[in-house]
Image (tube, rainbow, N blue to C red; front, side):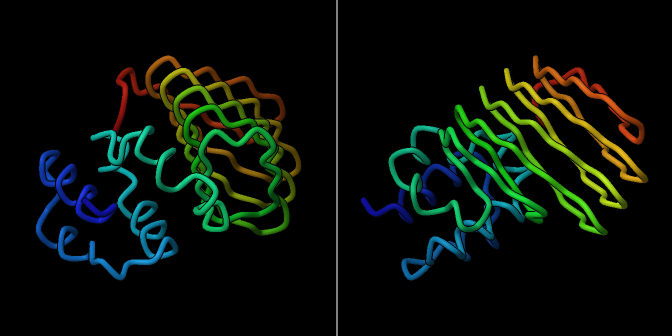
Length: 168
């Protein structure tokens, strides 16, 4: 069975709508699949779709240019618009100027995030992940905590909301 067929089968079992099923075509590039993953991240996280094992087997080493990381121990990025850390990642992320970004930290990932100047960053943390945030200047960081995720922060402009559930 092809990767696309496996994605469709698993997606249908988890309630993937017909519109999104139709977007999964055999000529879908990793770039297109990565864009779909980020656009549909709410469904993907809430339904564990695709599974971490599936991502490890089929996308590790291919989806990083599009902001999706799987078990990467040395992620270092600046002003990346969308970032998803899956598995056991270790990341240092920096945002400055007038950048706007959305970050998802899952599983057992660890991230250090430095936000300064006028940057606006939204961070969703899940599972057993750990995140350390430093904010300065006029930066704004909105953090949504799910599951047993841990967040530590310093500086001003950080707003944390605990959701008391495991996913969206």
